[in-house]
Length: 299
Image 1 (cartoon, rainbow, N blue to C red):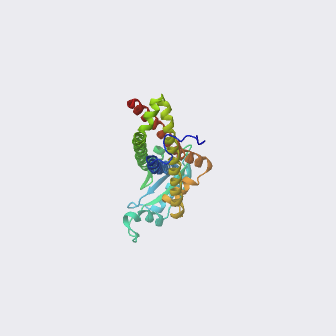
Image 2 (spheres, rainbow, N blue to C red):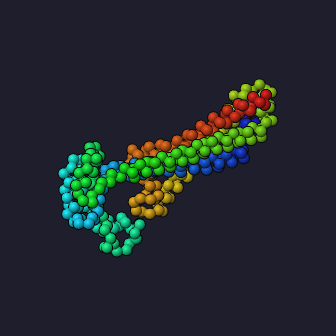
Image 3 (cartoon, rainbow, N blue to C red):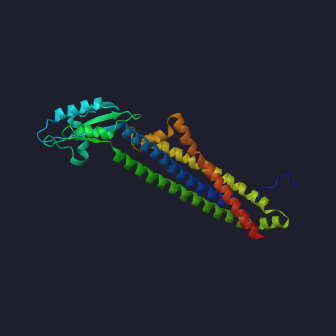
């Protein structure tokens, strides 16, 4: 007797487990990116639709025989007196022309009948009766109401499609992780078949043998999950630091994900930290089920 404690059945530096750690870490990293994208998409759409819900637009077109400035003033007076309207802002001609630049370019639009716009802020808790407002605006020549409902529907539809895509990616990652763990478990058990046979000969139960092996997979899943989350957070941090400093865009969204208000940040970090938990459970449960089934066949 040398006084040394007996070593584990599976060597700590087993090559298959090292490969599994790297592969699982990459998959956890991709899962973090998918979850981060899902959070950013939902947050952005909530912000956009919330802004659209608080504002409507009244357009006053130039009609023959009508004084657009006079009609614009009448429309503004009607809006200010209408229940549910908080404030109105008449946009000047240059602002309207700027909105048309993506379609008409930056050329001089003085000869074109550019419509004038009124930006209307409404009470989100008690919005105006839009049907009644649209009917009232019919008395004003060239006036029409845009509640942005179509844009809200399009944004919601787009968010749902992107969310489903993110969930599908996460599902594929989970399925792939399970398949990889099954393959690694079979490889480890086959490599240690002589040891397993000896344990069976001395009367060791399958549950005992599986516990000696799946403990390694538990540690592998935990480490892979932590590495993947750290890489994901570093990626979002780099996007936030190296991207544009202005509002909007991927860089600003990444900064919002990492440095949001405490109540939002806690939820975001909590969801991301579920990745190591999921990776650990997938590794442990999958390896345990695979080992039990294989050990029964070995007998």
